[in-house]
Length: 480
Image (cartoon, rainbow, N blue to C red; front, top):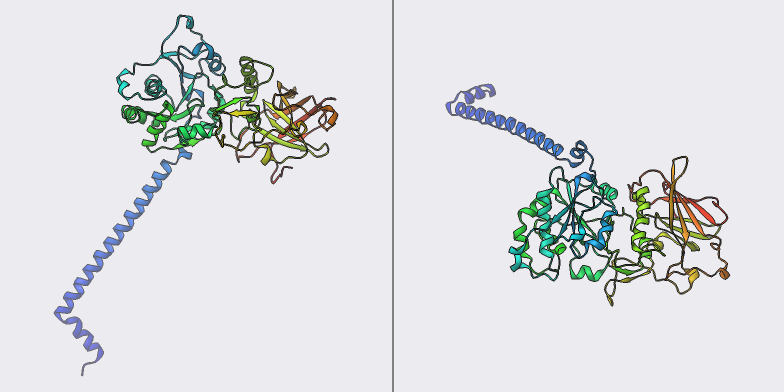
């Protein structure tokens, strides 16, 4: 009998066993090498991936770029020889010579256009697009010409441009607000920014995915570049859509890009008195107004030209708060105040929650008759009892207080056709009011957190006036 140790020696001394052990050692060594190599490769790959993520982090790279300003936006304004003379003041109300850049595009010129006003954008004639005539089955016959404007302005203005904004010659743009909004987005990505129509029928007829060109829309530089490279294909692919903005939306969709909605663009597919709409503006910076030549003058007892100039006085003082709604309460007087900064102030009898006051009062009419429902938003019907409707005060003046900490806007009582004041015999608590003064901080309003400003009703500024002071809302402050 062999001992255990003898058996072990005998086992390891056999030739087959030695070969087996040698093979096993080689196999283990190979596994070790593979393990080390794979670990290093994975670590290096992870390191490279992390570097890649850091390199293309928009929030980090955007910080290394200069902030977006008005010179980074190229404006393409579509006009015609038949409309420019009567609509010129809409564009000149916001155009800033030597600051804003872009062109006003005309089909042809007229002698009475010259000498060309230095207050107007530089003039550019539309290029000849007759080669596309076989594809022009659009009801809006100028559609191809306006689509092709994208390529024309891209060739003419591309140095230092981040964004291209397109609009009509009756569109009013609020440039500083547009700069603020575009600063939220990375101009190196594909962006198509705008808004729908206020009219459900208009959106059904065109597309709910479309930015309406009258209200204006904005394309990022790389998206415009991609559109220009595919413009012939797009024009030929969509020969029968109604207008240019629908063709553009369809081409943008073919590039895999969807509409980014910004509620501050306004097509204004409404009729008559739009004061109810403007007094309950969405909580978003005001970016544009369109169709001002087909609605009533936005301020009572004046014409469209002077109404626009009056609006621009408020915009010059603080465009960031323009039309922004603030709601506050005087429980002692049983009054609710709704302020649309730079436009109107409304005084209501009783305490009304913000969820109700955010709905515009239907002082306006639908764009399309008999459309039901007519609007893309909820509304309130004016009461037949004048005392259930608000007492309306319209923007009168703006000034900076001596201390330099506040801007003061004043609003005077004015009746509108659809909102008559309550009779004095009713003796409700706003009878004494003929003016409301609003004090707002002398700084641009930042909508960070998507929260409205709050306000306090101070002592009477005079026998027939009330003073309201805007301020940031406190944490957990609950209105009404």
